[in-house]
Image 1 (cartoon, rainbow, N blue to C red):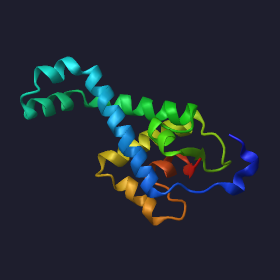
Image 2: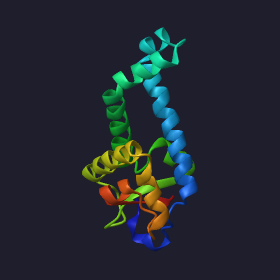
Image 3: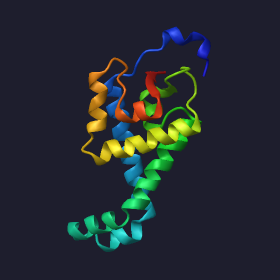
Length: 145
C-alpha cells in the first residue's frame, strides 16, 4: 500500500462492511460444509442433529474463522468479502499495512463480537472512526480502496 497519499483515505461505509461480512460468512459456511461434509450429510434430514454436530465442531469452526480472518487481513489487507466490495483494513496508528499480531487480535475480537449477539459490530455506528470492537481491539480502521 502506498502510504504517501493517506489524506485520500475514506472510511468504509457500514453497508459495505455488512456486505463484506455476509460474503465472508457464506464463504466460511461453505468451507465448513466441505470440511465436515460427511457428518453433516449423514444427518441432513434432522435439523436437531445438524445443530448438535455444529456444536460438536464449534472449536474447529472458530479456528477456521480465526485463521481466515487473520491470514487474509494480514497478507492481503482484506478478506475475500472485503476485496469484492473494495474495502481494506489498515493500521490505525500508521495508516499502513496491518501487522500479523494486529490481524490476529482483530480476528479474536471479531469472534467475541459475534459470540455476544454482534454487539461488538454495533459499536461501529457510534464513533467517528466507525471502529467496531474488533477494530479497536486490533487497532485497525476499514477504508475504501
